[in-house]
Image 1 (spheres, rainbow over the protein chains, first blue to last red):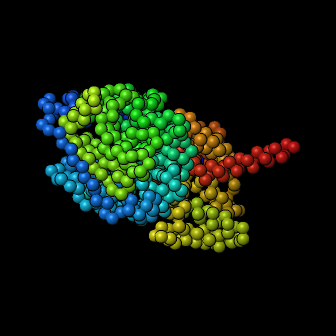
Image 2 (tube, rainbow over the protein chains, first blue to last red):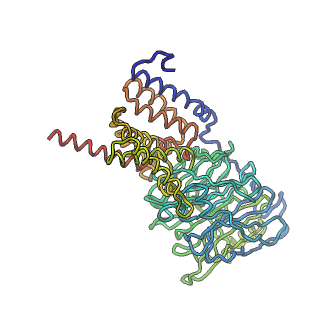
Image 3 (tube, chains in turn green, purple):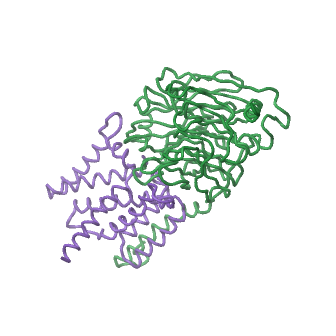
Length: 404
Length: 194
């Protein structure tokens, strides 16, 4: 080609070679730009959005329902960080990590299901181990941690989890696996590259949100030099399209993204600082182009994980530790539209302070039938599941609001 | 690790092997043999079912285009010193130093602006295309132009693990190397002016 166009000098040959490379690079770039949408908007499921709490199709639901179950830890001494997802065929599936102790080499990611019309969970099975991940990624893996599961609009079940090759949890990277058969089996893991410095210190805890263009937004956080929250947007193949920083400094981790409609959303944040031990939040009203600065809510936070979900109308339901110092109380709170103001309506667990009881890392999900599921770590010995309907929630709210 | 990562690390390790053996021999066959032995050892020897290269990749996932270009050119000149001329890598080191100095602190949380995040955006790569062409046309620095063009090409076709253009341009190891070269260059200038 160089001879063909008569470029004889060294510089001319270099220019021709570079031009050829650029022409080669153009098609994928043009395709990417063509399909790129900076803020496609949140795809919000109708989780009983237009009705009040305690109503089904405008009618009050018959009776309050409350169930709780312990998920068999299968002999694992330590289990932690459970997450929930709906299944395409109905029912819910939980994932968590378990092993002899946190960070041990035998820690794996486990899963169990609660199928529709069943009263008990299936026996847990291991979906990811350290040696399997090491083999799939072609590199040394030291430990596994926080899983996050998500059912996308096309029926794929995503499983994100963190892995560490060097150092502690601040050296984590995020991995993603996809199931095409409703969470039964998962394809090979893919590592998401989210940081230029040896790809360390990006972790997950909050559930992703479906976007209207088919992409998903995954809340992530850093805890290496800074402790701050970010949002990653991924296309349906798991390609990172965008990264957005939400906070600064060393105070906010484990963001929980809760969209209200296509343009409006709140991100609730675990407070990891020293001075203002409350749940903080940031908000957007332009589908995530811009977020407000972090603000404090009226709920305390002892530097522990939280989760939230939209329940009815503009009402939000939060599960959190109601203390500034410890994780001995796990409570539910409702907000009626102001993400900064919440009413504590029920304690899922309430132990005396100083007894060493820990109830932590809750995950909350509202299913298609309008029932709410919560899973959380019970003293790190088993995962507990609680399920209730809107009638129970309405009763709990009435009791909390009525004078004693 | 992707095919890009395996090939990239093989080139980098082969270059290191060639550079090390060049200290002890002038025979290009021995140097080439050493380079091949290093690559085979890195990929064939396993510890805990992970090849040695997997331990390197557990720290730095895949080498950047800059690392492959710089170490590759060193390795090639070690093998055939009389046939190859030394490219002027000074501008490349300077660019790596400047880019890394701006990008790493911002990516690690200093300030709201995350320069690294721009690398996921297709317009970042589109901005680099004319830059590469201008560099090759006006500045005549072909190495810089190849660096940018190859990185854009690699990101465009998703050959590596990363979806970010900056991961193909630089990596922390080559950034540290560029800092050291920039410091050495500055010291020489200072020492010469004294």
